[in-house]
Image (cartoon, rainbow, N blue to C red; front, side, top):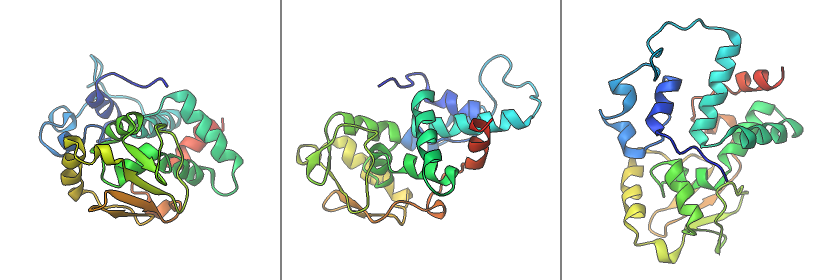
Length: 208
């Protein structure tokens, strides 16, 4: 699966806000937004004319980058959300949040979604006792997500658990740190998703 391999901090500067793509670094003075709070490139400091389309595009790009997706997969999720009953924007966020790599991050087993994606790809995460190495795997209520026995002593896992103390586990998940496992209580509702995303702008963009 294709993925972005460029500098993560550049993406935060492009969107003008912290996307928390690099774990602990995002909480320190080394964060790119703290040091250079303007867009990258020669025209980064120039005044940009705001427009409705620009607002919609930037919101879509920001959401893609938060969850580590490229355009094709993100648009596929939108089409899936649009076919479901209910509010399309909320359906989209629910689909994104139910990805396995996001759940691993939300449970505190990884410092960032990129790190969680790598853990899943390397076979360090089990779902209901079976190894799942597909980051886009969508969890369902009742699923049990756990760190594989061979990975329990890995330094990256232990480090993530220490760093996760600053991140609260959302109400739709439940975690047992001692057993290194968590369960999906339900699919998230909009008020249980703390990401600063205006999903209606994304819907308006794709609806044109």
